[in-house]
Length: 500
Image (cartoon, rainbow, N blue to C red; front, side):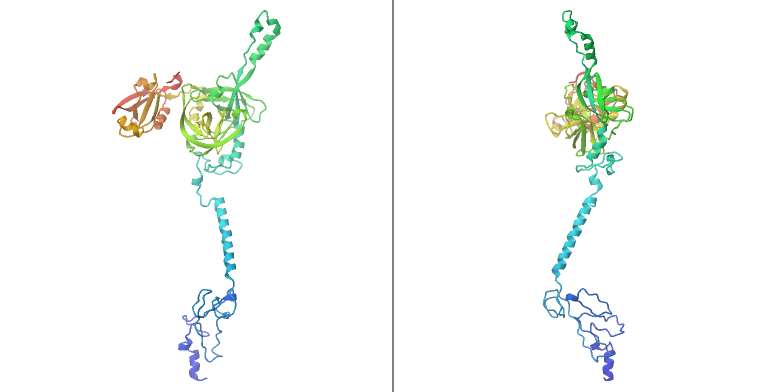
């Protein structure tokens, strides 16, 4: 081989040696690189720059053994299955091996994806990865409202929009503190013929028998109640113990009923506080904050409807701040009641209405006999305001001015010569009431109280109820398009025998 040919073989600058895919041994030119391809059955093999090339690329001989190397650059890759130069349509580039089937690979990848997505969906649902606690929790206004249940302390379970699953645990915890209250009356019956000179001899020792009958008692009615203190304080409805000569309280786990002492009661609020004495601490329920309960929140009622002791019913809070006339036609109106669709029946009266933390947020007191799922409970916000008075047997003054009212509707604005719907429309004024004596009349519109504007009847009710008996309220009143001022002295509803 002549010197010129040798120089051409070793000179990388010669045109015939500057072909893609060829690198002289020991070359450091960064612009020249080796090309390695794998296809078909050899596609899974791993190659290194110093390893064996694929069968689809001709081996590059050493410059020491071959006088001239003619290496053509590889043709661009084309998709599998498309015929063209350098390929046979099967995806094998210059080789004779068969391409591995892509269906099995695609199917395996698909199944792996299905398993992975399924696992992620289950985990996200179980651990609530994509649902905020705020969306689930409704809150109870207590320090335990945001905790979760541990199965043993259900009072730490947070409230949810979904049906709670901690009701069984909560009921187990609450039920021992729910009691049956029996109103007992003495017989007092005596045979009128026992004292007759003619017929008395036929009754033998009737006087002694009559004395025993008069000392005996019988239940004339029953209801429910619940213990609020380990020492034995009990809350119930006033109508449950009304007129009783003796009150008997049956506590779960005790063989005999307790004779309870009536500490205090309010006919107007339909509340009563009892006390029983025992030789050990009693189970009791915590009073929650009814102001923090939201409409739609799950509630549970426990009581003795129709004599079926410790019956549990569940429902939701249907509404708040209901005003309901007394079903006994005593002229009173119950205010601020909670409405629920948890089943309440005769015998539930005085029992607790519980949130799912096991806290009392109301005292079941009445039902609508003309409907289903409409029951009412006295909120704990009312109970807490008078509880100490009940325990001490003090009379509970009920502030009132003696009017019925409603919000101003759009239809009233023009007729009453008003600018807008802000204000309280006076529907009726009770005769001989504080409002009547002050000069307030039917169809007046109250727009201000003590210089502050009032827009709705609910606002005005809260102002009156938060006042004390004897307070004076300066009312800004619109009458026939003219503004006037009337001062009303808040009275005590207990001193009103009849209301119109």
